[in-house]
Amino acid sequence: MRVALVSITIAAAFFTSASPATSQEGAVAVKDPAIALGFAWLCPGCGHLYSGETTKGAVIAAVSIGSFATGLAVQLSRHLRLMNELNADCGWQTHPSDCVETKVDFTPFLVGSGVALAGYVYGLIDAGASARRMNARNGFGFGDIDMKPSVGPDGSVGAQFRIPLPSGR
Image (cartoon, rainbow, N blue to C red; front, side):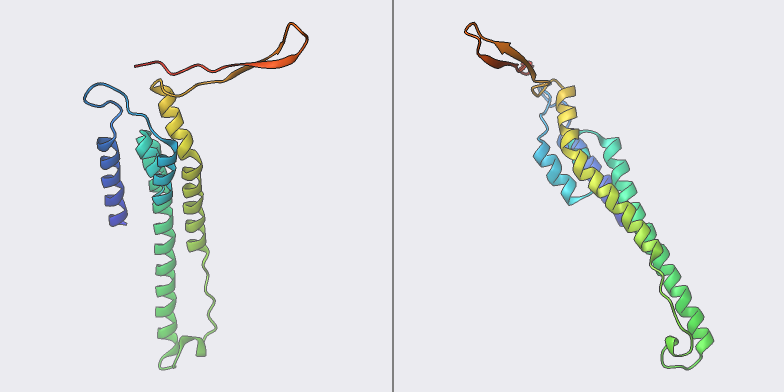
């Protein structure tokens, strides 16, 4: 658990300092949605940390890693307690299942893994959108594409597109 928290802290410090919102010249860095998706694939929440949504990235990472670690810890503690009880009850039997029928319950691990997987998948789905949101917030991107139908002078039907270009900051 401590290793996970240290890793998240280091990743957050690296991503926020290595790709700040403004560089030394005062220009805003463009965030690539494909790179954000790649970081999200490596670690839950890292795509959001890369794009600049550090709070959201930290929450996704904490929920995903924390729920998996908690489910695993509860599962292992239940298993060890069950083995200790069976060893105390069975005495010198060769295997605890020889004297008591055991049932293994994986519910804590499955619940923790399910929540972790949900957080991981959410981070994957939202990482590219996070980069696009940050680019739009900083004035990058094409914004909304407007389309309207048009009729030409000869009666031909067509469409007109208006694509706003990014402002040159």
